[in-house]
Image (cartoon, rainbow, N blue to C red; front, top):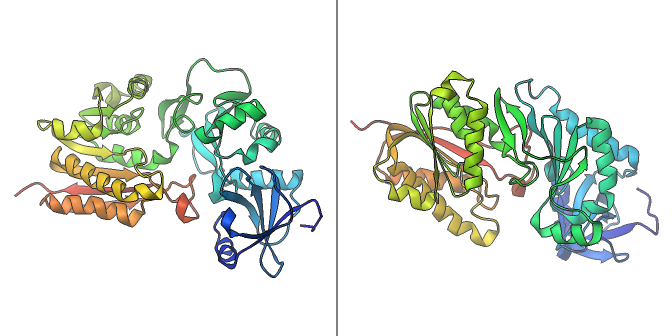
Length: 406
């Protein structure tokens, strides 16, 4: 990359230099030692070490203490239209052959871990959903839009925005969360396949991009463990774990969630799959309640398989200790509802809680229960959700099988 006077050039601290060379994708404002001029959000920033050697190029954010998000590192490169196209195709082609025709929902681009910082692109059949987590993308959104349309040829492209950037999106760029960037508008949710099951995704108003695609493999595993069991799905969202369990031969499934909207979606997902005899025969119950309150209050209920999959309990580092206590309490209360010979499946999506800390919290609850158990397995991110740096490693799940009392 040429040292043009117009380029925004930043010289960074030795500590930040080491972190970037180690693969970390973020540069914070306090790590900038020298800057040749004032930067604007969304422009390219070239990063140099103290010896004036090129380190990386990223997108500058004047609005955030996370000042630069890295796009490219290593040898200097010309960031032009051809580079953007190659950069895009390199990532999306990694999914070629990853899924068969029975799975039409997947993540196409997974943010920083694939050098597309603060951006994810999800596919739901013919509909693509672009979610942005930083204003750095607004100045080049049209360019990214055209790239997605020309290379992936979706029927529709939907824009989703994180809450922290919705105001600036509206005021400065006339963009809105749920806006249709390409194709005709949507009156309802879209449908897609996951391992042969049909699901709906509310891509306009739903959480994330409309569905939690990252739990695909854990849903599949729960389906394989559910035969002949009564299954409790806590923080159930739209009933994904329950539907897999039903197809796997569960006697009954109980969805517990605070959101009526989510529970109604779960009912629709079951209805979409009623042609599968096991789903039609499974008793599906929905309960609108706070899981933290419902578990200790329903002492008469026992289940052969319990899934605990709460939303993030630590959105910032200061909440980490409280989150670990909450995970332990959840596991303890869940085990009180677990029948003899039952299986507990516990997940965390809190990036500020490490896998080791989370697993230990659940294991400790199991040990404290006094019941004999074996650890079946742990799991992390699926193949279409790679995580290449610590803050990106949010998903972890542990499976414990409890032996019947003697």
